[in-house]
Length: 413
Ligand SMILES: Cc1ncc(COP(=O)(O)O)c(C=O)c1O
Image (cartoon, rainbow, N blue to C red):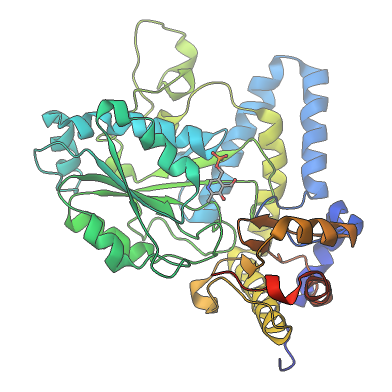
């Protein structure tokens, strides 16, 4: 390939903040982003507050830290922090939303009318269906498969090319029986970026809601939720937010809050949480109405370290460098005779570059023996350089990959 320089080499100054980068050639951020020293410092101050303040830490520090985390996420996706709902993982956030959709599946008239009043012309008939795609992360489908005994039907739209699902294919599956369309902003195996604006238009024309699982996008795909039409946005900190396990978040469009009333709930969703009244529940007017119980404050501390970095660098720059390194990887893979089994066009990709390998596990193990960390899914080695990776690391990966993959294992149908 012709000489290629990934933009923003100045970001390599951040490498020293990530101990993992000294220990390995780490090209697996789409599974788990590396941990920064900021996260360690924040975790240490959480522990010091616990030791120094005991339960007083809740009021003096921790509730403020949780507000700070909501503000961090809000600023990354372009909304005020009070629109954010914290959750321990995406599955929990989805379960809360699924509970709010139950009356819509049943055709409860008052619930359908509230949706219509909020601008989603849901009509007056039951909407038993949830539409997703064959390329989505399993937990999205599982929420609604689990509701099959209640009559909820999950429609899984196949991918024609194994890489993407075009809006037209989804449009065919969305009709007056559809309550929700739920899919990834970036697909977790192929790295394809979906056109959520086009999908929102299709959903809303047909009286359905759009839920976007942005786990593989937040932090590298600039997102302005205020200007956009995504109804429900869920994401988490494991990957491109460099915030580790234990923290996820959701943003429901404020116009929909009165229409989406959760029945899976907890005392953190109460408008008067510290009144401790067992016989009344008025849901918080803001994003907290979708929260449950005591959050994992140590996870929040770790997550704030990653979020601080993302805010400092900016999603634009992070996305540009990530995609540039991906383009380098694609070009080098082509030169080496490896098959890229993902989207090639930088404007339609997130941060994942899948390389076709018939039996990927032994290859990933051999790379780990070389000190190179990537992962695998069926039929692919999944590579994901991030802003902190060097071009030389990407070159080394392709050199070693070409050495480990036998020619007959290089393409899968
Ligand atoms: C697209 C996507 N959604 C969701 C998840 C995780 O879901 P949860 O937070 O429920 O574990 C992941 C990865 O772990 C993912 O890649």
